Amino acid sequence: MSSLNLTMLSPLATYLDEISDCKLAPRPATLDGKVVGLLPNWRPSAIHILRSLGDLLQERYRLKAVIIEQPVREIPLRTGKLLDTMKEQINSLVSRVDVVITASGD
Image (cartoon, rainbow, N blue to C red; front, side, top):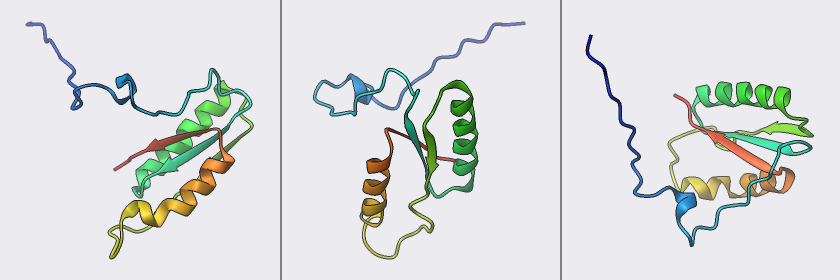
């Protein structure tokens, strides 16, 4: 049998958190005592992925709460930009959580 070599490639030249002028939110040292927000895209599988992840996080950490919200229910949009329709809901979620995890499922 011949051996198989795999190489992982990134579509990005550098990862976003490696760019010096990138303003990423600071990461907490632990999730203990934190409120975790779960933000799926509009695909049904994303909700299942995040619910399972939320369950695992609750087993591993002492979370204060897990909040799952789906700000977009229908795609495609007829007018405007996607983020324009989500702005108020995203701002509301951000004001209630310490960490947000998002997923895209298909």
